[in-house]
Length: 462
Image 1 (cartoon, rainbow, N blue to C red):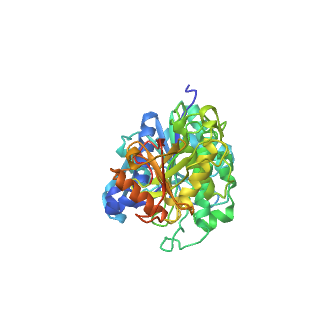
Image 2: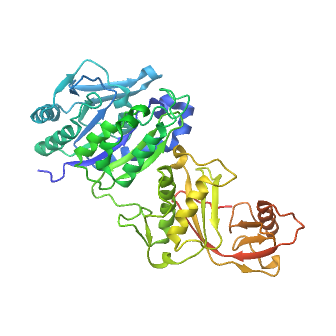
Image 3: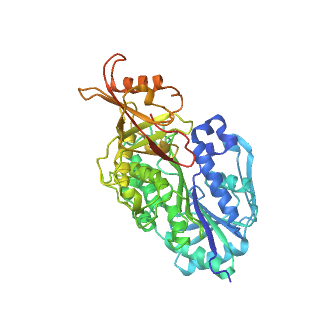
């Protein structure tokens, strides 16, 4: 019998606009979500499940009971959304469904059979991605009971026991969207507090605080008009609330609905190199962008100004740090830093300046949570500046520059900025940033620096 029958669990959103045949040109606004859904589908296939189990909040519901599709073929399409070619046709795992119904009843749950209806978009959209990745095997699809009726953990346990009893390797997909009230054009109207649900939910998944997910404030869930928590709780229960391999891959909300994509459980999955360790120790230079990202996420949660992470080894030194935010196309979105250190180590310095770059760069509006997953973060660590006697000692490809006047105006430009090819350009931009006229006397310093960036980032800051 399989020792660990649950081989994968993930969360996928279900808005039809996320499928290319429906989304069309609008898909460009949710590219990060679509890419992340493709990643989850690929990981699902790599886990080589025998059976795929999915739960959809849009499948038919009855009060006090969970639904279980019982048609021999599970069929649906996105025809009513304008894309009849996006279709699902998968075989039902009848043996698994029947055994699951029995295991659920043993736990006091009521199960009813869904038949004679096409699959809803809550099932069809995630399945379109899974089919595109190659899935065509036995499938089981469930519907939820009504919100607040309980039984979610028991259902997850029944699924896990069924897999164990039948010696089935299963992958479980929770279908769900987050707040439906993020903007004035959102489908459920706007609520100024709705974003708090998304921020709370994503933060818990990112931290692996899975046991806190069922305890999210029900009033907050209701005002957000979300349909992600119950499906996710079932998925977490299926995996026994284990956090192996968990990762939030993306979050976006461009159409007023929050779309989150996450790997909830993937045993044996290795962490990304820039993933911070659970003991809070940060010892590697390339982990600094992850510290910066966590600092911005913590700010959305009203987090403490001090980093919960501690520096180890070389990162325990004090140096100036700049944090740079860029869009996926390389456009600057924020850059703030310190030439001379103000914190006790590089981790604290990064934490402090990341929040400043995201929310207090006067050139830009504060970063919104819906765009954070698409931003690429860079951290530049500075050597101490040294005075230069003339511009001949500068080289914009090698040195950053600090220009300053006696009245305290100061402009800083990092080295190796795209488009800054000459010393004259470098000095002109630095002066302009500080409001120093071209012919106004000023001191000049230079410094070297090392930059560490997200995997997809190629730019530094300015």
